[in-house]
Image (cartoon, rainbow over all chains, first blue to last red; front, side):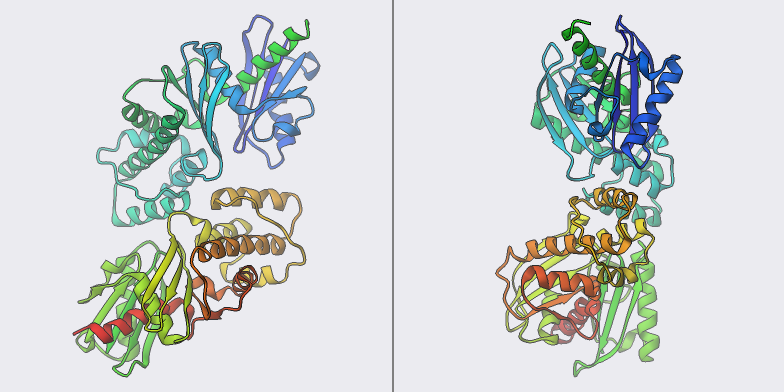
Length: 264
Length: 258
């Protein structure tokens, strides 16, 4: 019994294959192609290749993410909110709150002791605080997106950023560069505004321990550290597993449920 | 001579008037995220154009995002007051002014003396401002100054659903992949922007005459979309809608300076 989860987001596509014992066989993350269907096919074939399998070996696949309805090989689609909650709770059953930062959205999720969704708040109307926000800032600062976290941690005197809007913040950063501000201090200031935005959302959904962070921005240590300061507590970070894969993991777990329900 | 300067997030503008209120010189240059350099360059240009020096300026009023950076003895003035003053001078019957700049959109009720009665503004989000158009024209590789012509030649109506400029950019890329034309997309973008501007304006009681100013007032496709959504005719601030705040600042300098 082999199951798969396929998570096609706005910026990245992720897929994961799991065996009957609940072991993760293979997973991968890639930048999306213009068409969500092509992204799904490409990421799935990459993961199947890693696993040494073909699509016919998959007994059940659940899709999730922004492009989840366009994936023909998935037998069911489930919202990424449920999938992130489920995936995070499976990794660490102590987790009750998940903050997930996607490419184009920001979600605060509460799960119960079984990993089932209790409540959530989502912002998908404004790019502030999302992956796209950091991507824009990285571009303006002319640094790699994945170097932004380390750069922020090295900032000793974070700049104050008054804008919320991604476009306006990019402009503020341009002005700071012209004024001669240190790039690390700018990155630190940006990490702080990002963490503040996430903290607001977490407070709305209610913070209950343990708190975990998922999605691409979980890899930005500058943001994670600022958020820990704001919530005055620890944030669980996944080291054994890629924090970007949590949604696909949750989808695979739901696929496993479906097979069990069907009595396979 | 009296000088009005408006250092904006995208452009730096200045108007020089004499004691009769006649415009003697004016200019518009890109700020390029460096208001200090832009301010210095603007002073030099205005002085050269009018063959004068700093000592010939009796009073200078400065406004806009970078207003502190003008390197001459000046007083700082709120954007709204300058716009209202300019609007009253350009069109005394103006009762509502819509100013659409790079990073703000303002709707101002103006009285017959050129004073601000009431206002609404959005300066928190790029959705209602020039940056919105800039982001999309960059994504489509269409020069900003040609956006209006592209939109006007569209033969199809597209509704853009995203309000956020960043998300609208993704939506636009998806539309390009679906084979939609640049013309249709830009027409949809300008209509979306116009709807946002009109929503803001309608939070005031919009009374005639309606004047439109700011850099975006030069985009005739946008202005006609604003008219359509307002269900009312508007006028474009002369001599150049982008100069209205600087002109108002110069007029206030003439009235109140020294």
